[in-house]
Image (cartoon, rainbow, N blue to C red; front, side, top):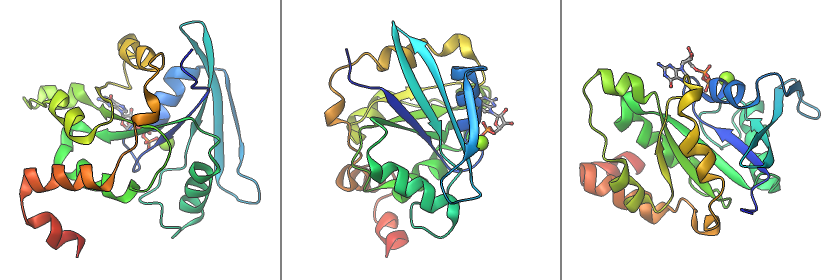
Length: 192
Ligand SMILES: Nc1nc2c(ncn2[C@@H]2O[C@H](COP(=O)(O)OP(=O)(O)O)[C@@H](O)[C@H]2O)c(=O)[nH]1
Ligand SMILES: [Mg+2]
């Protein structure tokens, strides 16, 4: 038993959260509002490997810096610790841009995995993504993913069975190391 019960989906808008949420939960979903906010709350359940999981589609959010109700809801929910696992989705067809957006999510103390979504698009563009190298660099699980194709969810379900999740914390040092390797000193300039 992996200890994962509740999974939260986090990304910039249009990275595929709702597609994954719908793919996982089908009709087993509930749509309401976050307490005290007009922001939509989507929660659902799915079964995999004999376990039942709850999944929350966090409101599309550019950062966790509380500039909008969506960001406040997202930040507070993550900080509440109600989710055991955060799935960050990025658009793999624009990987460089997507990877920079990850810096906005630094500081999450909950185990995190990175889903490189839209791998079908990335493949059609002829891109080769060394996701294993990325995984080593970031020290969190990285999965090539196609949220739009439920037949390809197997590796995601398998990930939920793993027991080493306490280690999956996205650290600033690791991310910085990745940026420095990819683009050298330009990263520091962007952050300054
Ligand atoms: N080709 C492709 N399109 C996808 C994939 N995942 C999501 N999309 C499409 O990308 C758009 C944004 O997805 P959505 O789930 O609404 O993103 P959200 O804003 O993060 O909830 C929609 O048109 C989806 O159909 C994928 O893996 N491959
Ligand atoms: Mg959505």
